[in-house]
Length: 139
Image (tube, rainbow, N blue to C red; front, side, top):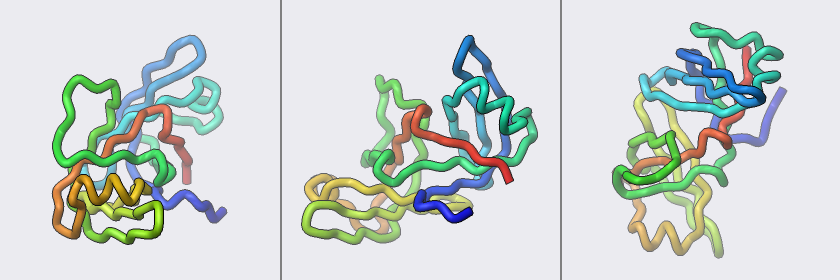
């Protein structure tokens, strides 16, 4: 299956915490970063997830926010530090590629935000991703 989701990050399940309907799934990405996905308890069962399971974390580029440093006092659990590799700017939007150890992530942000943050190749950033915006797929 081919998907339009640009961000497909390989990793391994490290922990699962189940609630009544939803579960949080801890993932260690291949580069060593930790990521959390909030998915339904039914999806955990359907995917056969358990600690040690290989997964791909799927994140739409429009669901990735960027900051120029770590952010405190925020409910967003996934904060991945990286370095901008490219910025492609259009009339309204910008596509920003961010390199992390072992992988790359794309963020679609407004052109004005990219300019306000002075984003260019080499700029250190933190990618912010809500755990509810992380989908999981198994091989």
